[in-house]
Amino acid sequence: MTVHLHWFLPTGGDGRTLVDRHAYAPHAVGRARPADGVRAPDIAYLAQIAKAAEQLGFEAVLTPTGTWCEDAWLTTVALAQHTERLKFLVAFRPGVVSPTLAAQMAATYQRITRGRLLLNVVTGGDAAEQRRFGDRLDHDERYARTDEFLSVVRGVWGGQPFDFEGGHYRIEGGLTALPPDPLPEIFFGGSSAAAGPVAARHADVYLTWGEPPAQVREKIDWIRSLAAREGRTVRFGIRLHSVSRDSSAAAWSTANRLLDDLDADTIAAAQSALGRSESVGQRRMLALHGGSRDALEISPNLWAGVGLVRGGAGTALVGSHAEVADRIEEYHGLGIEHFVLSGYPHLEEAYWFGEGVIPVLASRGLLPRPRDAASPATAGGGAPLLVAGGR
Figure (cartoon, rainbow, N blue to C red):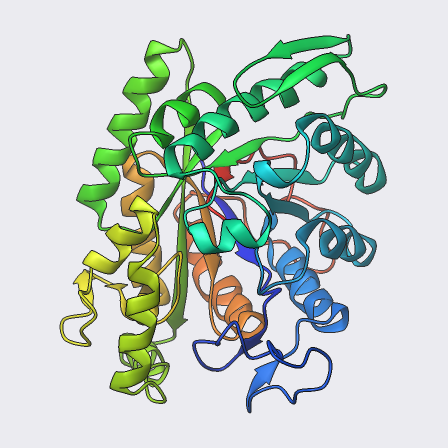
């Protein structure tokens, strides 16, 4: 079992700080000036990140979904024209399009990109965000709908007319005239009791946010047992940030600088907003630090500082290249195959990780040697991928 490495596309903006997702003109779209040090998520900049990720040997890039970022489908199909092998882990919400249309979109995407689509199914944990898109179901009902949605998608991909009748969807003769080839792998995440059975029935890869190893082991055991009852096996991935440097001291200095422009009021406001989320995974992220700057290293080289102001993945691997590789190897030993990583700013951090950590992992036999400009494609390949939580 080798390690599969993936990067992140910051379609809500990027920069040298913990970027405010609202920095792009929430009150005057197209007229407001971006905050100092914040990079707009235009195609030219995102293409730089995508090309760097491909060159460095990452297999795919994750794109988020939601109000404060660009549409993942449109952005990534544009970026596919700037890359050759890189796959795109496209986040989308089941409640905003019909499952038959989603199946058709995926099939078209696979033909346009020659098989580079991976699906990141985001059920949604914020009721206010869901209502912006016209979705008024409660938390558990959203997972019930996702269960039906994925049943329809897989059925429609079968190449024959497909009928389905459930509590949320009634499909008669659902069909994609040309099914996708290959079928996109499904990434899925969720920490609630409602999420687990859905992952067990549908996920190719279950993706967790970066909790300490003991908690990750508990999640793996939980999903494995649920999947076994369904007669299935599920692979596992983890979503983390990364701050890797030539020395441990330099890495920790960089991590701590990310908090320099965050005052107590900013953190308190962010924690209050994040605390209203219905997501069990988000509550688990908040519990790692309790809103305090104290003791943010919650496990060796695992730093919870990002989660003071950022929703979703709130922890980072921080340390020397060898130390970060140690932690990846530790998670890998638990059964984690896929590592979806990011860092601020995403262009520079891709290089720090790609040129620092990837050679260490390769020397330990955990992945192929990094690709260089003159060598054939060996690190991207046709690796299978996962179902996850949005960003």
